[in-house]
Length: 165
Image 1 (spheres, rainbow, N blue to C red):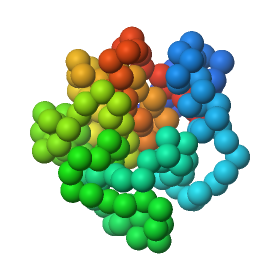
Image 2 (spheres, one colour; image 1 turned 30 degrees about the vertical axis):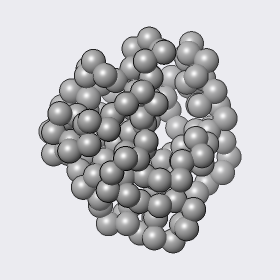
Image 3 (cartoon, helix red, strand yellow; image 1 turned 180 degrees about the vertical axis):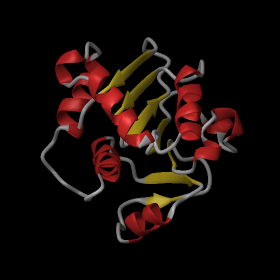
Image 4 (cartoon, rainbow, N blue to C red; image 1 turned 90 degrees about the vertical axis):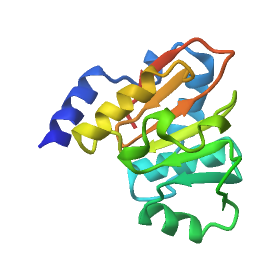
């Protein structure tokens, strides 16, 4: 029931590419998230895989990796997982959402990207997601309900977008 209510609120507050006024995010949404390719049945994982392809990411760090991500990347020889120094982080477990609790917090540099899987699973994960959005190092977030992209881009104004996929 919690997720359903969160989804209803998300639909009410979200938009499509027409509600985006950032050229970076508009291009990301139209050329990546709204592309017709379907790489996975799970909408969140599909958005993740499209994003990895769009940004030409070859190495990712999976924090608290879930079984779903192990299976996703085992069959993909183009994407390697590493323990450190990746510019793309994937977070699946709610206890590691606040950025200060992430062991990779020193690796969060300009240009780092982070994917958070299912930020509305439960109240604790949603509260952690709010903490991440409000972190001073985070500049852009694209909330897709099933997953969220977090960008660390010093050259951009802090903005949060809710996009229907």
